[in-house]
Image (spheres, rainbow, N blue to C red):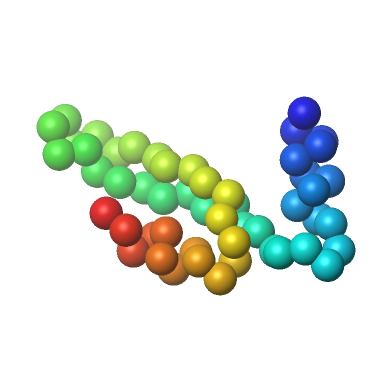
Length: 51
């Protein structure tokens, strides 16, 4: 299945996507958690600025 996802992300003429990993600190434990998403390249800054 991973090969299929990669193939669709590299398709010509489509929207370009970016894999984003965001590090957040948990308010309860103080440990870091990681949020991972595949978003359009134009919305990367919006994803990173969200809390």
